[in-house]
Length: 238
Image 1: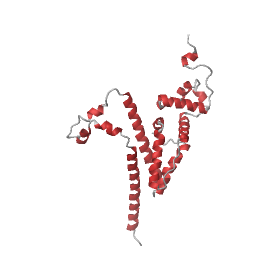
Image 2 (image 1 turned 180 degrees about the horizontal axis):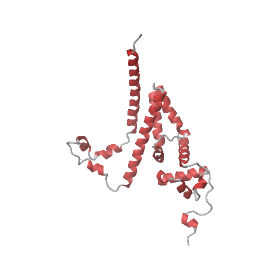
Image 3 (image 1 turned 135 degrees about the horizontal axis):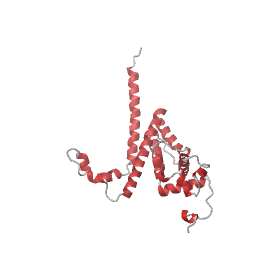
């Protein structure tokens, strides 16, 4: 007859609970099973404990994820950014991308909002500061950060999802064949792309897209300044 220890795969005394031990166990689950499987109940089973016992060390799953993100951000090397504002804006935005891409599970739990830990806020500060130095009002600089954030997390989340689907697929995606079969009169461009679509959309074009996003944001700023100047010139002098 199997003992309880044999059934659970563990022997001996349960590990001593501490925040550090909880974070290590949570990281194991994220690395091996993915963020969708991480829960306080699953974590408790991993540690041969109970969810209620874990709550003495972390308030809830949100705090757990923040602590994990904070630990990851502390380990990430902080680079020296360029002094020229536009170049610094691009560099800081690239750091944001690389920090998130370095740990894929982070993208999946962060994609719904800017769930940022204090240890990662220097990246946000760098982006906002560079935008202000580019001539944006502070409010517009925050807007610029939000646009960069949504582009970055969206691009990484879609890429991670695509890779997960492709790793499980046993045959080519339906879309690869469907595009070839489109009517060339109604869909001339998509028909011409055909099976090349998968390869084209799988390319890592993040940097190219980021440069376009930043260029667009700065162009918006230039246009806004021009409109304001025109309004001043059109104002009656007396």
